Image (cartoon, rainbow, N blue to C red; front, side, top):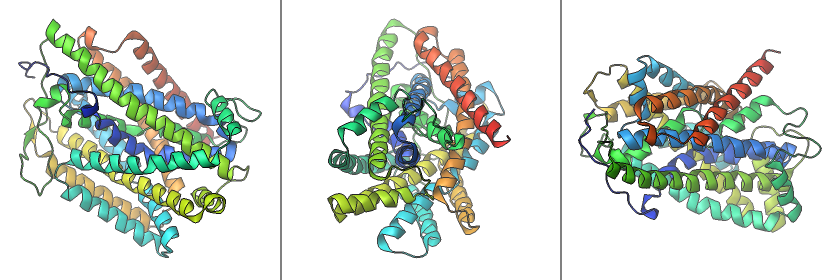
Length: 458
């Protein structure tokens, strides 16, 4: 690996905002919009401690993923392939299987069908999948396309959610939320009697992007030109000019005091940007949508599919006006659709690069653009097949996907931990408290995955 470069000078903080919006967008349509609000609508706010812990663990995991790409200018998958030759096969299957399930397009199509009174939801879901493929195929560069889309949805959606929460919630709702963040429910601590472990694990895993999609932050750091990513090639569309065959390996920098001083500035920049955008806005969104669901439709009865979203819309329409009820559903549908675009973009990157890495050798060059679109349209074809076979219940698909992604994340923690220990000089690694919290995240996922799998066979 070339080490002749020095670290570039970091930009100003506000001009660095961007990469974490994409990862946040991947979370909006799953844990934030559906899974945590669903649990809150049934059990109240006492399970929110799981959201706080889940997104905090993912923040630490993502920071370690960014650390490697910031220092090496390549994705973590390249580094992991150099460590263990068969890992690309694991990443291909553990990404394709859970993320090709069309839960997001199914959910967004159901909501749009409800708003506009469309009868054939299955065909609409297929159209959404095909439209997603067109958007990602025709965009000039993948990074710019995704950053624009996810920023737009968040800028439009979050203010409306805040307005609805201000109009609907009461002081007692916020007291219950505060207690829920430390695990106190209505007469119980941490877990209410009868809660489905698979639903909780799914929400826990989706307190953020979830599964292997957290690794995608590595791409966004690199393609934004952060750290050593400044010196790497970018993936362009098949239909735009640009270099197609690129070297997917990065470069390192010389370990000296000047570069170390720049490194500390870079690290404060990327960790701060990710904290504000991914952790803070992500957790805030979970809390706002959960407290809204609890305030509007709290009951001890179970909901079918995503009916609780329609019930929230109906209550909003009756309390403060039809415009707000419809607006809530429109924002929900846009969040789900943007999440579908983000999921297919990130998972296709991961699948295609790992397929190419099966043939890796030093100085390896490849056409990741072509491989990306093969993976993208392959996933779309698989999703269409699932829909045509009659599997289109959104919450079931999302919960199944989330449980599978929780297993993938369980392995992600030790892989990234050992990757950085092997490749980074000691003073560029995480602090001891961060490493301990990182290990704690792995232990939590092992426990929850073990409990859920054990519960399935009891």
